[in-house]
Amino acid sequence: MAGFLDRAKEQAQRGLAQGKEKVGEVQAQRSGNDLLRKLGAAYYAQQRGSGSPADVQQALAALEAHIAQNGDAFLRGGGTSGH
Image (cartoon, rainbow, N blue to C red; front, side, top):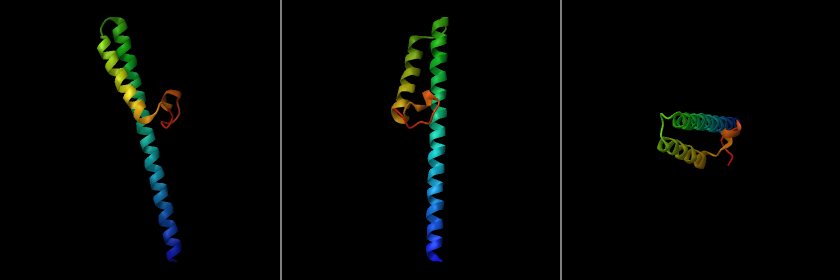
């Protein structure tokens, strides 16, 4: 009986860890998509004359930092684990 309970506990812990990992991936993907939108908006504003090159550079730097930490898979519509 104890062996069964131990195995069930291990399976539950693995499932919880996998769920947390998936949540982290989704959050990183959403964050990357948000940074990509901000870069697009900054570039558009610059082209229209209401934004600055500094705003574009700042948005680009934030996006590059996110990619360095989380990968660039979100750019391809996939998860966040690729570079």
